[in-house]
Amino acid sequence: MDLIPAPTSSVLRPGEDFPLDAATTLTAPPELADAERWLRAALGAATGLPLGPGRAGEGIELVLDGALAAEAYRLTVRPGHALVAAGGPAGALWGAQTLRRLLGPDAYRRSALRDGGWVLPGADVEDAPRFGWRGVLLDVARHFLPKSDVLRFVDLIAAHKLNVLHLHLTDDQGWRVEIRRYPELTGRGAWRERSMVGYRAGQRRDDRPHGGFYTQDDLREIVAYAAARGVTVVPEIDLPGHTQAVVAAYPELGNTDVVDTSALGVWTDWGVSPNVLNASEETLRFFEGVLEEVLELFPSEFIHLGGDECPKEQWKESAAAQARIRELGLANEDELQSHVIRHFDRWLAERGRRLIGWDEILEGGLAPGAAVSSWRGFGGGIAAATAGHDVVMCPEQYVYFDHRQADGPDEPIPVGFVRSLEDVYRFEPVPAQLDEEAARHVIGTQANLWSEFMDSARDIDYRAFPRLAAFAEVAWSELPREGAERDYAGFERRLGEHLAVLDALGVEYRPVDGPHPWQRWPGVVGRPIEGPPPVR
Ligand code: ACM
Image 1 (cartoon, rainbow, N blue to C red):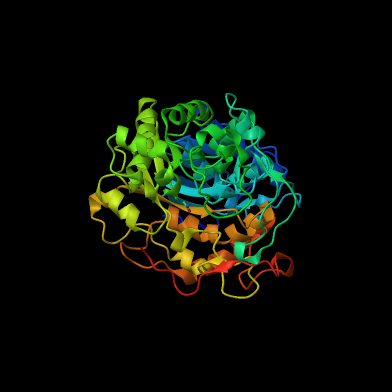
Image 2 (image 1 turned 90 degrees about the vertical axis):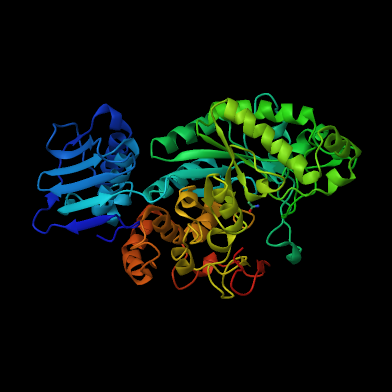
C-alpha cells in the first residue's frame, strides 16, 4: 500500500480481498452523506459500477465511531465488506479517499477503462492527521484561474488529504470577488491592460488584457464543492497594502494628497505597489461593507486580511495620514497599520470569526485575537506562538511553490531558492525551540502558490506537483519519532505509484528528472536566488 500521505498504520491481509461487482452496495448514515455521495460519484465513474444502497455489515459501508477524532478513520477490508469507521464527516471523506487509492491509479479516471476486475485488497488502515490546518494558497489575483480549474484543484488537494484552500482574491494586479455594493471593484478592478512576462529585469510584456472574477454564485459553488470534499475555503482580502486594484476602482480610498489616484489603473507590474489604502474612517467603513458580503459567502472561522508588504512611503508623505496618526495617539506608520488590523480583528470577533494575517501584522503590535501566517521564515511564527497566538507555518524558504524546483537551465521562469521535492519533504513546521505549550499554537502548515509566473492550470500543475504530495505528508503524517528525520527514500519509493495516480488525474506535474520540452519557457527571465535559503 504505497499511500501518500502515509497513514498512521497499515497492513495488507493477503487472501482477504474484496472483489467489487455490480451487486456491491454502498451504505452510510445521513451524517456521512457527503462522503457517500462523493465515493459513489468518483468510484462509480471510474469503475462503471452502480454502488447502489445496501444494508449494514455488507458492501462498502461508512459509519461514525464516536471514539475517533473528527478527522480520524479506520478502514477495514475483508471479503464482502469494506468498512470506513470515522470520527466525523471529514474522517469519512479521508477514509473514502484511501479506499479509492486501494483500487489503484485507474480508480482516478472519469470513466471505466475495463469491465470488472476491481478488487479492494484485504487491509487494516488506521489514520489521523498531525495538523488541523493543511493548507494550500492559490493566488488567483496575479493570474485569474477560471472557476472550473479551481474546482479541479479542490479535487486534487482533497485527494492529498489537504483541507484548507486559502484563496488570495485581491492584490495590486486584480480584484477577483464580486461585491454587490461596490461594482467597480470588479468593473474596473478585475482586469489589467497587459502583464509582465517573467521577472522585471527581462523587460518583457504582453499586450493582452488579463482578468476575470468570480461571481458570488461562483464562490458559493466553490465553497460548497470544497466543503463536500472536506476542504474549507479561507478567503484573503489583502489590506492595507497590495491594494492598487482597489484604488484604481475607487480612487478616494488611496492617498489622494500624495498621488493623483484617479489616474491609476490596475497594476501591470509584478512586485509591491506603493499605492496603498489611506487609513481613514471612510476606508474602514468601505471594507466593512466588503467584508459583510465576504462573510455571507465564506462560512470559514478564519478570514485572511493580508497585512503583508505595506509600503509606508505614502503614509509618511501624506498630511492626512500624519494627522490620523496624531489624532489616534499612535507612534508611527507601523502603528497605523496595526490600528487598521486591530479594527478588523475586533470587527470579525464581534461576528464570531477570527482574523488571520501575514507575519507583518506583528509589527506595531499584534491584535489580540489574530492568528499569523508565518511566511518570512519561522521568526514571526515563533514570536506569535510564544505570545499565545495560533500560527500557520508557511516559510518562503521551504514552501513557496513559485520557487524553482531545481538548479538547471531548463526550469521555466526560475525564481527564488531551489526547493526540491526532497527539501519540501524534509520541511518540519514546528521549530524545535518552541516549548510544548507554544508548539500547540502551530495549528498547521501551508504551501503557497503565488501566480506571477503561472498563468494557467498547466503551469500550476508543474509547480505544485509532485511537491504538493511531499507537502501533504508533512502536513498529515506524524514524524516517525519526535525529532526524527522523515524517510525520503521510502517516500520516493511510494512516489512511483503516486505519479501514476497523478497521470490518471491528468496532472501535468514536473517529471522527477526535469521538465518535458514543452514545460520549459526559454528566454523568459526569472530571478533565481543562489545558495541555500537563510532561515529567519
Ligand atoms: C507574501 O508572500 N507577501 C505573503
